[in-house]
Image (cartoon, rainbow, N blue to C red; front, side, top):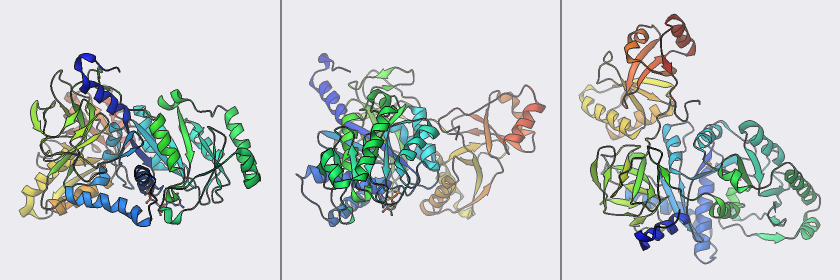
Length: 539
Ligand code: GDP
């Protein structure tokens, strides 16, 4: 996209700033090392930006406590939104995926706000269930993925076998950029496949410092490492023959994945990852609007809300909306339009969250995540824009829920607060709300992709709305869209089925299981049911 000279300096500034942005998320199974890697990335960037100063362990903790302090000061959860830091000339936005052991819709939606992902694997475990689910979302959205094989410092699986697993299980061609020298657990370092040199792995005390790198030529490496080097070299040659050479286009069109080996806990491999991200990961592109027209990066400000959260500060229950900037320049204080309601939204309290500095940053560019405070009027999926032309981005998908429950207030004197809480949780997308005349408007059915969402909802009702819930799970697990609402009575007439309306207007038919649904379809030939087409629906 070239700058339009008629729009002048500001335009080229947007283009320039956008091209520096790398907005990504880490997808992984719990315990693979996501928090450790996040800290290592931030530490590395910081260590470098402060002119090569060596930081001690205290500083590593400093990275974390800085976030916590900001979290408290701003009354929002830093770790659940985005962390921004600069590395060289690049500005990196690491958008966090919530770290539940369970799947929630939150996690999936976050992936609509990123341009690429890092798939973090534990060397001893390879692809794990949650990695697979998140990867499926990336695949659906065509998000390019870098694979980082972590914990190579301790016993794990064979490197070739792990690469084969990528190819065979998820059909993603591995393109290793580094190759481990020494088995997992006897990690000597990596062969840098770009220049053929050996980079030695060094343990640092508690991973407190950016890992020092000592490079050796292949000849030196053979002398130093003997058999381990020879084997790594031969395996690397083998990879070259089997089509594992790096191909930027294949990475960008998400048919192949660059692979790196390392150990986040000692920072080894983290620099490789940062370099790869800044040099080759995709930068923000013009986003397609609801009519599939690209919104040029240099068009006036536009953004979409991908996450809404209630403030953590008990005194201020402000709702914070996190929006990803898609075009133009965001400036704090600007009044923008919410495309869903056509109402103005004042960003007076907006903050660009989580700059390295504590002070609020007032300007944001495409790829950045902005935290909008006092955002009770905003919903997940809303588009915000400034000026002309108007724009509306496609809404974020709702996922096919497979868990359903009714929630009752335990304390009847708190019914009002209870209902308010339920509405709030629905608006934030913590759970989906389904209703029917039969059940009564005041008793919605809570629906979720993973049961953990109910726990979060119950906890928040009790703590924030001081109104504990009693959950009564419903015996449904299969859901379809009822194409013709006139057929409602058929489904409602079944013993193991029911029709409910979701708050986005979708008419859903719930069944005890697939079998119950098939039986009903056989008995009612004209019954029209459709799968809920949304990413995640196949999961
Ligand atoms: P998360 O659940 O994915 O955020 O994982 P954490 O970052 O909390 O890490 C889980 C555990 O793995 C912690 O005990 C870490 O210290 C450990 N860990 C993370 N990275 C490495 C690594 O590279 N090597 C080793 N040996 N342990 C690691």
